[in-house]
Image (cartoon, rainbow, N blue to C red; front, side, top):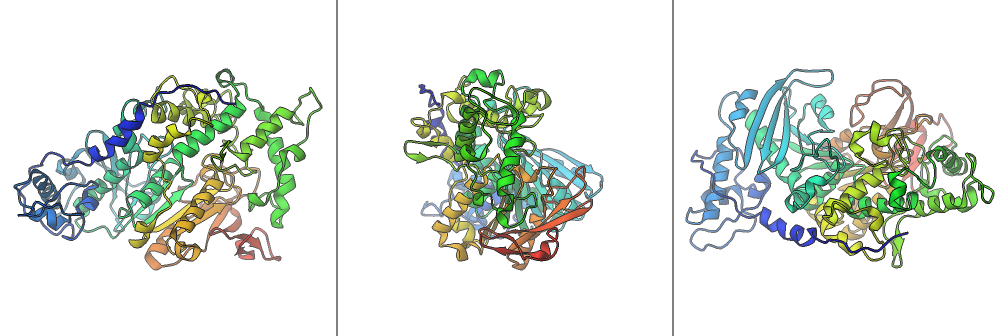
Length: 613
């Protein structure tokens, strides 16, 4: 299945050495304006600016651990790093001036390490307040957009896009501007070329890899908060992050590496294990489905896309009733004891047809669902059964994750030359984030020998640390959710991560006070569903997080709705619902699941309770 090959390890030492360099002191910035109380004197310098600088005690030259704003302001000017820190504080304090700030005034805002490039008023639209749109660049190339609504609710909600990021598409912006949040997004320091989609931006550029991995988001939130304070002239009451898929990884990274940045975080369908899960895990499915590079180039999958519905129908026929209801929803796919070797219809020897599977196809289905492994055991979580026929999961006209479509590159230019999303994201990651070799192909990856090569990139990009103690101690709240039928980030890997958090942090009772996991039955990646089934997928997790952070309401369950009109366009975060709702269900905090009480309509959430499976 794999072919050994010697690879370049160019990125390893460069990535490992870069973090310290990025956090080193920068040249001093001139600013002589007297300080004000925009930021509390006891606030840490790194929390305001998103970066650490050296501040030394007057007279002793001893370094101050985690210097505050007051420490930086009082630092004597006889040390260069002290001047840098003091001048940065004075510049930011001076950015908030008395009187009314107009949107256009922000164009002349002077902030350390930041260039404001635009500040324009945007009129109100349906479900979106009028707002001031600010564009800025941090350091050399970290671009951000900050949106400041006229009816500000005093809070900050940051969002992002997906995959390799690289744009300013803020998935949280609609919900933010509807609810009165100031909001922001960053490209994390790179722009994905439209004619060469993927990760070529990272080639021989370890600084961009570090910024993409975590630093870009951290410094962006700090700059956004400075702009928000300068515009509204009052403190931010609470800060939230709501990220999906690739920005869900950003959300997880913030809780792990930068616990002071946000009070509450929603990590939605998070690609937290981007290197060891996405790159490595997806290479497994593609080596199986396309056994040789020429198979992927010519689009010659082992199993044709036309058989995906038969696979999905066979799974549901056996497993739909495992939860006590035959309703088109697999409440707990792990209870589905589906065995493709026994349960799939087999073609006669030497034959193939639309109503059966060949021995080779069954073997591939079996190995894909079991997940990658080698002589040492399992490498990454196996995939649960169910949801294969959801559009975009295994296949779709514009590409799918596992099999894709011959029309994928034509109908979805973001795929570049690739037919499947698994191949696209995995191969680009191997080329530019892991090996630094534009000629690399994922078929060269050897699961027995090549795993150590992914460690340097994983250390910067994967949000895989189960130690959330710092986030817990600052009283942060983390809400993670994924779909049980997600063929992008793998819901079983979300369970695996949460179980590691439980083991690290002292068990369910302690962890449930600050971090909870929700798994949505029948949902594919980021809430997509099979439109032929009545699967609830509209869920307001943002309100659940607000209630938890602001009122102490622990979310034991969150309501999910199915909108009857499949053409209804939904605002991210699921609110407001526009269209008829014909089924509701509770989405229960893991490890519990929605269980039918035994009477009443199965379309009414009131007739279900949360119980451990």
